[in-house]
Amino acid sequence: MFEKEEKDPIALFTAWFEEACASEPKIPDAVALATVGKDGAPSARMVLLKAVDGRGFVFYTNLESDKARELRENPRAALCFYWKSLDRQVRVSGRVEPVSEGEADAYFATRDRLSQIGAWASKQSRPLEGRLELEKRVAEFTLKFGVGAVPRPDFWSGYRVVPERIEFWSQAAFRLHDRLVYDRDGDGWQMKRLYP
Ligand SMILES: Cc1cc2nc3c(=O)[nH]c(=O)nc-3n(C[C@H](O)[C@H](O)[C@H](O)COP(=O)(O)O)c2cc1C
Image 1: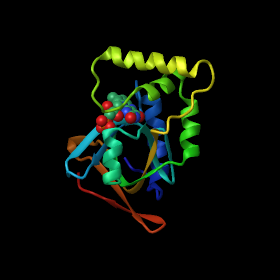
Image 2: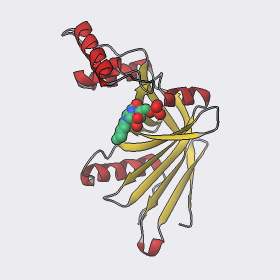
Image 3: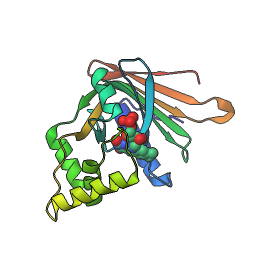
Image 4: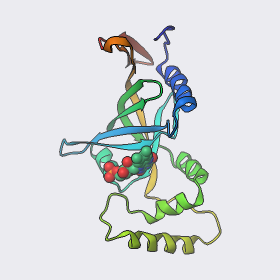
């Protein structure tokens, strides 16, 4: 499966991601994000990958959400992609850092207006009396921002998972799957294969 031994896991990820974008029927950028807060209990949920390069893997969220609180308590995370159409999994783990204000502003500006209003209206992860309460908040912020550009809320931004380890898993016959792991080693990467 890994015919050519790629030295750069980001290049390999990018190639796999492009294939997934071509073959997945829906949201190839969906990824499970695992965090662990100060209570030591792991927590996982889906997010969308919004950027990837040599610096790491970026997602956006509400900074007052449970995941953001957990990341403040313990700035480490794991990501797990699974592309059913390709029978492939990629696991990433490492430290997490906030993206720059400029990066968050630039991404927020690309979201459609309703998603921008939604970011203002949602007190993500906090209790909600009922759907009507949320709809009222959406109406309030729609009125507030009128027709001009919607600014990014200061409680909404992104995080970058800076990878220390990236594992590529590809299904093979008889459960003898291929696993290739890259561990960060100074400015480069150490690559090894693992038993399935
Ligand atoms: C496919 C999918 C993609 C999602 N993408 C995001 C995302 O990019 N950012 C986000 O904050 N929540 C996203 N969510 C919602 C989260 O899974 C989660 O419900 C929410 O962020 C609250 O999580 P928390 O309480 O652990 O902070 C997504 C959910 C699904 C099913």
